[in-house]
Length: 136
Image (cartoon, rainbow, N blue to C red; front, side, top):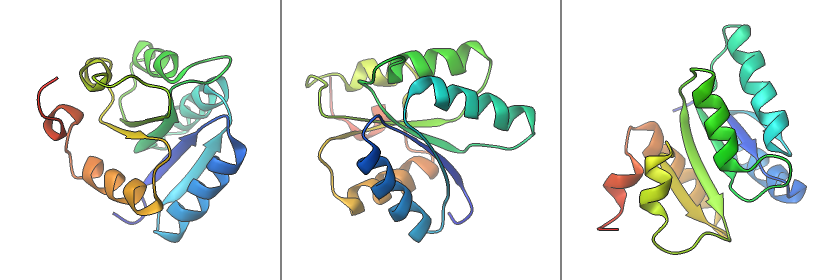
C-alpha cells in the first residue's frame, strides 16, 4: 500500500510525531494536524488541489473540534475517505456507533506501533469496522 496519503490528527503532539515517523517508515505519505479544525482545512485544501487523502487517523476526544465533528464536517462537504478512530476514552460497545458515523476502524489507546500499521492495512484493503467486531 505504498504511496497512500494519511492524515494523522491528535492533540497529543508526541503521539502525532510517533505515528508520523512510523507511517513514513512504512511507506506512507503523511500529513499531520493537532486539532480537528486544522485537519478539516487540510482535507478541504487537498480536495481543492485535486489531491487525495486516502485515510484519516483521528483522535475522538480533542478540544475545538472532536473526531466525530471532523467526520460530520467532511461528510457535509460531500467528501469521502476512510477513517480510523483512536481514543482512550470511548466506552465499550461504541463500535456500532463509530461504524454508523462513518468510521472504518477503531484502536483503543494505548496501542502498539504494529497494531496501528496492521489496522491501517486492513482498512486500506476495504475491511469495515462492523466486519471486525462480533455483535454490539
